Image 1 (cartoon, rainbow, N blue to C red):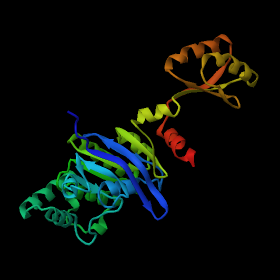
Image 2 (cartoon, rainbow, N blue to C red):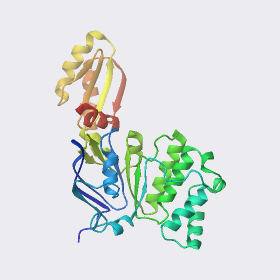
Image 3 (tube, rainbow, N blue to C red):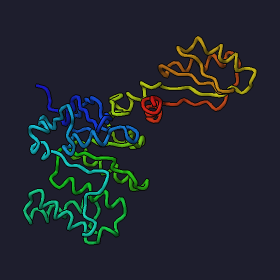
Image 4 (cartoon, rainbow, N blue to C red):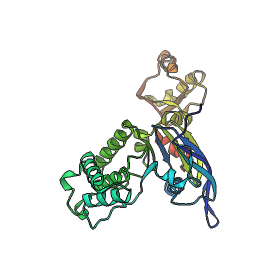
Length: 311
């Protein structure tokens, strides 16, 4: 029997006027994973998320949440997820405690249950000390934590986070990352949009790279990095007169061309076992080198290759 997926997106398309903002996107999210939508501003990430969460109607395509169609079974599908958008949904004129109480009641909790859940969330998100302060005194990080707490009132199995750390300072971002990891440890599935490469690398089990409304690639961060280039060996030839000799000596050792920038040479490695024979050949030819480094590909390389490089 096939396991039910947390999210199934099939051929999702959205146009605004003559502009296609999301163009025939399909992917799925497994229960218990952190799935990231990665792409530059205007790529279509937020529009895709708004269609998945029924805030925006797709022109064509289908979304299922734990097997339930968001159009045919909208109420049931919506009951299974929480959403934290880019902008806080909380009321800035009242306190954190009052916000949580109101949203708890709106979600159908009794007054006593709402009071208990509010206390739990204030403790869980380290907001107890400021629970009764007006939100105008809250930092950006505190507001984001409160907004996330609101989306977790009903303990949803799936949580959508739209650029959850935008505008936060580095320390608060790190705290938010740990909160997200804790949610996953407790059994939640998380789908987040982000334009931060370090965030995607730190949090996501799998990524979908979106650019100009199209799905470019899907895979784990490691798979995406490997697809755009693999490991590189970079070093500098100490004597300028030996550069041409070094290129000639290295050519039989590699399957791609040796790249040269001045006295610096760069070689793409299919596997790390190539490293020893390459260094042996250099040593045998009595070529002096310096500043040697072995560089693994990064999500920066993925981002530049799959998005910026296509513009």
